[in-house]
Image 1 (cartoon, helix red, strand yellow):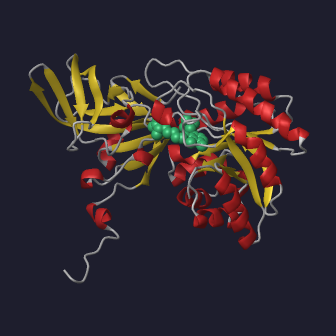
Image 2 (cartoon, rainbow, N blue to C red):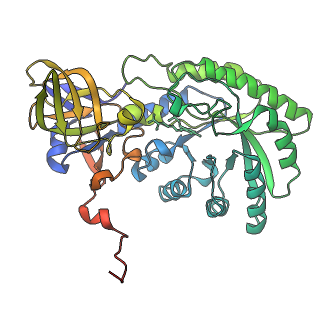
Length: 417
Ligand code: LLP
């Protein structure tokens, strides 16, 4: 459920016509609905009711400062995967004790930054990383809270590029190695073992893979208990899918019920790292039709947004619904909606029935709130789009459209030229 709805022929973000935002801010533009973010956050939170839990929103989905501030205001923490994400989270006022740090490749300076910031814990992804965190914590004079990210070898049945919980993926420590690594970590003087973590993939539309991985984790947890290694936190990662097209993902409440029935006797504090489930349907990308052209039996709709703005269709063949900002098109047409980038893979829609958009028409690509702006780039020297947050009948630009000057910021020509 989201708050991008038609009133008459016009598409609105909450109480504001999208067309008014584009008139003020230009196009392409990412538009987010605050009420939708809040609703999704609360639905997820309420799904775990009285069970001790923390929602550590996954920054990578949508990392705008205003969004992080909104999450912090709702009581959320964050899941980060880089020093840059840590910086954003701290700038937005996220409580460091609600920050978990995942990722297979943490640099020394990033580990140190996180230690000095007193984050809750590192989700450690390799044997060598355990040693490195222990060493750096010693140098900094801190104790590092850690969980081992275990790879439960469960197939999440999603796109291969966003499947992480299979043994052949680069993520986590295998089930076979985990006990030995916990034992090793327990001997290290600068580490405090706090929990166990897993994240098996993204855009999951079934609860079974989540439940299967919890079952595997529970075996490990009891083995650890026998060794006297007690945990406080069970971090189950993110991954709950959303509806882009015809998917039918479980509601947060169903996901919550399935997870709680598996975890209720463990006495552990649950951590979740949802990204897409909170942000995905809370944002759209608005763009404008520049030209149309016919070739043989193909109809192309050429717009001012491309794969540099919304990479998901080009990268994963992902589906994003497209809706007219004002419904005045003359029927439907089978078309490719393509961007200005010089690549054949630069499409947002491939061979689909869409409204017969004409020059100047505005359209909204739905479900672009997660992995939209954060994956955008300057390819073809295109300034990145603006981001706007809507709250009822007001809106604010939460990231200015980049300028051409921004494109060359930090570049210089050597003095021998
Ligand atoms: N935690 C960890 C450790 C992760 O790697 C991820 C996502 C999440 C949480 C959040 O997952 P979510 O709840 O959003 O599914 N760019 C891809 C998605 C990549 C997901 C990477 N990791 C896409 O556009 O579909």
